[in-house]
Amino acid sequence: MIVRLAALALLGWILGFIWFAMFLPQPLDGRPTDAIVVLTGGAGRIDRGIALLEEGAAKRMLISGVDRAVRPSELAAEYKAPERLFTCCITLGREAIDTRSNALETARWLERRDYKTVRLITTDWHMRRSALELRQTLPGRVQLVYDAVPSHPSLTMLAREYNKYLLRRVAALIGI
Image 1 (cartoon, one colour):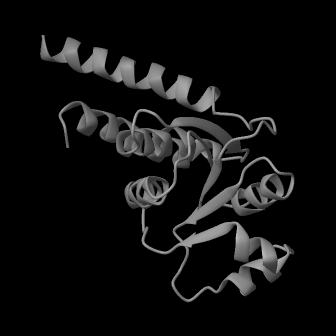
Image 2 (tube, rainbow, N blue to C red):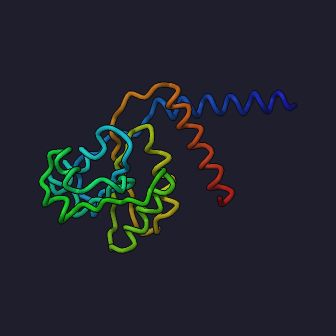
């Protein structure tokens, strides 16, 4: 009986992992949202957010998880963006150190504004867990749309992220 349950659990994990790895979230079109939230930590994320902001796809943008030593002018120079964009429209979130605290920082930022739609930008393999964390902290009135930055993760990275995702799903189910 225990062997059968273990085999069933392993089969479930394998099938779930195949789904997780084969159907990674994709980039979104340029449709407008009230705000953009970019989670630091992966190539192309901030570039994508700045490009969308410059195109007028949102009013404001939060970059969550920025190191305290980084100044807006440094980011503007690094990403070849006008400094005025960082002055008027980009908030550097400096409180987050992981995905869970990204969600908390984002929720606090959104509470101070009356936004109804938010575009979440992160890497494709990181999107599901990030969205799960963010949905748990956001009020129900806020619509979250996903804009994944494509990448080429290794199987090891995908397996690690899938396990984190499963653990956070279980924790959410039992209220942790």
